[in-house]
Length: 276
Image (cartoon, rainbow, N blue to C red; front, side):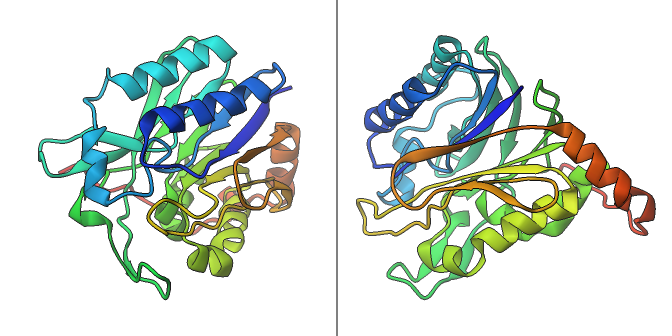
């Protein structure tokens, strides 16, 4: 039986320390056919946003990608890499890229965070302007895997239901959501949004969040969780470093879909954006 795991971190502005935290958790997991999902900004978090450019690397090779591929091979897992900065054509901005890497260290898919967190939040940070340093992704990504068809999203993307409606039309069986939800927005909306996306998609959702107080004082919500196709929370943790795991049973997925055949009832088609 396949296992999915959300790793929760309290990442710091130190790449080596964050990679060590990932390996520390992988070493504690029992061997299994497993998909591991890392949080958003797992590689560098808690400094100024532009500092992420100091660890940005070209797509295809670099210290972060090489380390993650090696960890997948060493521990025999598939991985959703959270996000880390990939160089863009603009030297002042990067893509927040999330990769699917298989247990042989091969990249099976890439998703760049689409929706930029340019908002006002009633917390110590106040103003968030992600678009100042991040290039938005151009469209959704679907990856076929031993765990079922995967639909990819990152953090703020979870608020845009049309993305997930399109994934449902692509027969996605598993949604993955690396995140760094703020404590304020997480308390208000984290679980309800995660459950809603699983219910709408009639599929599993694995959401890996940052969870704690970071070096720059930013507070993230944690509560990484796994939701089943009926919207039930199978596993959830609190704050701090740790993980949650659950077994996938796609017979449940098919049962939910056959009893409530939403795909046959849908009156609207969702079309992804055209690449510019």
